Image (cartoon, rainbow, N blue to C red):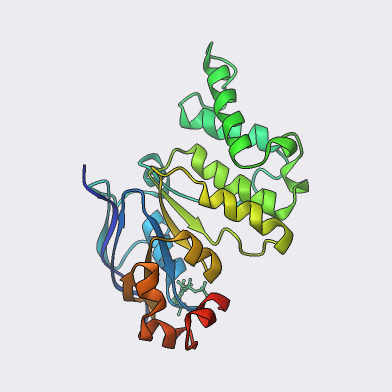
Amino acid sequence: MSDIVLSAQGLVKKFGGITATNNVTLDVRRGARHALIGPNGAGKTTLINLLTGVLEPTEGKIVLEGEDISNLAPHQRVRRGMVRTFQINQLFASMTPLETLALVVSQQRGFGASFWKPLGARAAVAERAEQLLQQFHLAEVMNQRTEHLAYGKRRLLEIAIALACEPRVLLLDEPVAGVPAGEREELLQTVAALPADVSVLLIEHDMDLVFSFADRMTVLVNGGVLTEGNPEEIANNHEVKAVYLGSDVEAMHAA
Ligand SMILES: Nc1ncnc2c1ncn2[C@@H]1O[C@H](COP(=O)(O)OP(=O)(O)OP(=O)(O)O)[C@@H](O)[C@H]1O
């Protein structure tokens, strides 16, 4: 089995005259905690949309576990193990975390929405849903409608839903954005405790989270890769510092 789980090769995305993704090549290694950073407009969202299949690349290809997935629809990529954190804001609002996770686990295991039907299936689904509720600190709110949950709990549920899809690669899209200070710590700890065998690509503005989480970083600027390295290399890279307008690591942490 290759050490590289997900590979973007020479990806280009043009919107008319704008090149939002400019020849991006990126490898996510098995078990990596890989962060994608860059200033506003650098092309992070476009790159994630290319990886997940929301956008079609102008050039280049995407390989997941050795298979070219460039022409697959988003749901087919999810089936093959590339899962992005799910934006919960509208969907599932009237369901509880328990119902939501039971439904996703049930779908994932091929029981569809009828998870109460096959004998034994219900117990297996309930057991996995229960594990996820515990792991994501949702057990005490599992019977509340999601629309009534605190924002931090909703973000936890979004990650739990993604994990219920049993990803090989989890694309974590700004997990702490907009989360109030009092709820951040629980979220940060939960993200840090994600299973080691799930490779994670984190897109994040919060440099504290990036530097505490990532073992590898890719810096995007103007749609292209400025540099890639481990956290120490990135923190000491002069070009990266210049991009973040700071002169030292503290400035990056505060960005
Ligand atoms: N659908 C589109 N049509 C035209 N231009 C687009 C489109 N989507 C993105 N762009 C442009 O592509 C560039 C990269 O945008 P993108 O949203 O990917 O950056 P980003 O790094 O995610 O930024 P932010 O951190 O602000 O979300 C920007 O110049 C943006 O204006």
